[in-house]
Image (tube, rainbow over all chains, first blue to last red; front, side):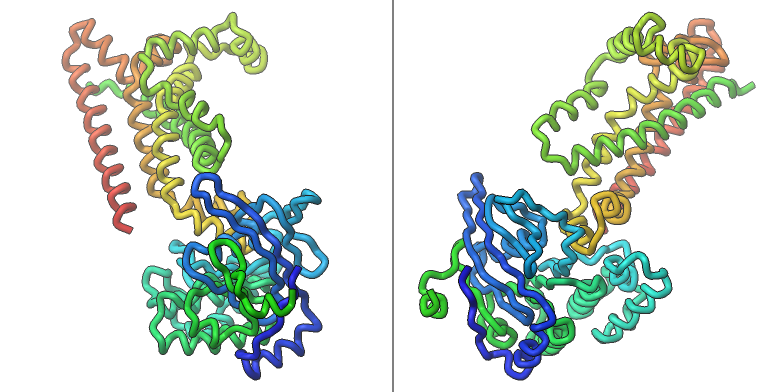
Length: 249
Length: 221
């Protein structure tokens, strides 16, 4: 596995995350898979320490597939996915932890807010069910408040604006107390002003939780603004001319 | 006087058969919609074959399968103390077999129409496969499922051939409205036949209208 050196673009937030990193664990990813039908193949390895790592590359390069493999939604042919020393997936050892036991907050590109549930019920869905219903709703309201969308609590997703939907999706992902956060092009549908506001929220999350955050994007500016580290992808491989990779290998 | 007895019997049998077909059919449809097993298509063909088989052929095979001399028929008689064939239970089985394909086909389409990402989101949020199904996939497919049950109910009300073969034509026991219409015509009781026919026709049309409304609303949303 190739260690990744941090880029300092995250500024002050990155320093805070590095301090918190001691208490948390690094996500180790090594996945290989081939889709016979499309001829697509993916073969890469990288680490995601606590803080924001951006997975950067053109569309079709396998970014979303990589996220799905980490979450357990796609089963790689070979490789290993582990949080710290705990293996979630290990092809050679026959380990494959079910999706719902990995506790990975996954914000899909489409957001996938449940259309038949209110914002509050979306946010409580992933919470620990040993908590009372009232306690879960209380926490959901607090999370919605933190993302400035308290006013949509009793409404269903069809009535949300793009920014509101995005914020509810982030609140839902946090509601489950995740071990890892995966963000698939989380800002693609938003205008520049909304993006800037949400960047703050995402940086805040990463700082508070001190868990590995892996964010997919194909926008250079977004990667530069948010990333503590960057992993570049090119059609299923890490980019061969990735200078930082060459220095270290 | 309106021939209530066969109509009430029809509604009773159709209701029982629809409930069983609903549970069984939605379970099969769920498996078909979510499984990647290679023999999935074989199950699909087996379940939907009643759509294309002549009702008398279906009835014949059911008789062979459930008759008092078959192993299954024998077992049921030993457990419940009564045979299935030529009883009200037989009429329910007949209606069930005829209506199951409608439930499976319609419910499967409805379940497959639910964006997979919603179920995946539920799984990542900590829901096991069952919880994801009951809290996300099933509620999002509910209109299609209700439509499936209504179609099944209409099919149950209309069954003639399978019921006649498996349950016979016993007044007050297995003589449903469809069978009673045939009997009434044989006995030149045109008034009885026309009343029952009208009742069945109106019910079927109302159900079809409701199904169309339900599925149209699903496409809009």
